[in-house]
Length: 460
Image 1 (cartoon, rainbow, N blue to C red):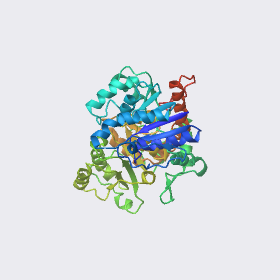
Image 2: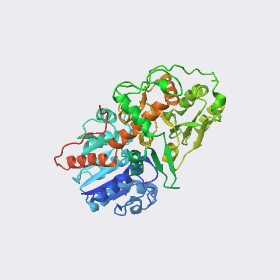
Image 3: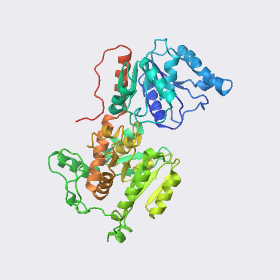
Image 4: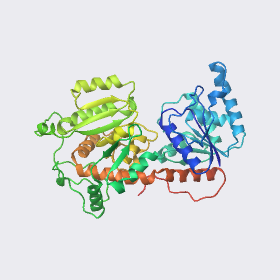
């Protein structure tokens, strides 16, 4: 096929990374692929590596004149470029690009698939004008693609009259998929940084986790009493679901200092990791408060939150007021996020809303035991309703504190969850599995008949 993919830019970002992964894979499969960034002042360079076979058309190079003229002329220029390209199918990423593409292709009879990258019901990052344009033009698209079933169900109500709604998740980046599959051969999950080619091992030997999972599935439920923390409640239920509600033998109490504190100073520090933009919807302020209450009871653990944003000073002030500058770290944004995540011992996500939480998927692929709040949308599907990560209610702050205490004090549970997460997401979110779903969607909008593959969501 001749596939044309349009995206606003090819800067560093989640949508741009997925776009690069898809066009590279489609070229490798023998398709004729053109990537068309539409940003009016594009650099002409992609942050992510592109296969030499991917043809690129930068719309900015076809625009001239003052800013307002360029904006008004862009749909007409875009229509001309699309007609010259004559693709069999068009794929468009992001709401503003989608609206412009649908306006520019009206009457051309080229199938258009528009892709929403955020949860449309909860997202507040589009204007009223753009929302109205979306409602008006999206029924014209041959298909609207979202990344989670939850978002798709809501979107069908928010924008009525759609021809077809498809659910296709983001694929794992090839480097992380390879690392996740290496677990079978090496007994560890490793990530090799492209920057310095150093390997960072994550989690303990998977043999222990494999034995734990096997014992669980055979009905022998791992007991906390077998860990160094000495708790007595089951870490998992017989069906393999982590028992977030189980009460540990030693309940964390804020303001208490365990006698083991001095010993912990000589032991290796463990790291709870979070990552994201420092904005209110990530709820890092709440996470800092929760860790502050837990800190006396987990003296060998630190919290590291990677990112930057407008709330950076506020978060720093909160850490200082809690007197936890030595335990809570805000090192800023990293250009090696997977390497940073791979050095952690557990991952937590507290977002109020996500379109598709790539960082949770990537943490699970790297073998980290994860605690996530059940925000719209993605965590429930990624974790298979709490089987492969501890899933906490969106407003359940006490539940978050209990889950974090559980994951930080139960080594067997950490190993088991890390192993379970790796196996689960590498199979459901592999590039091959996602490409199969894309091929089904292409066949559907082109009028071909195929059997739909099973979507990687909420499997029993």
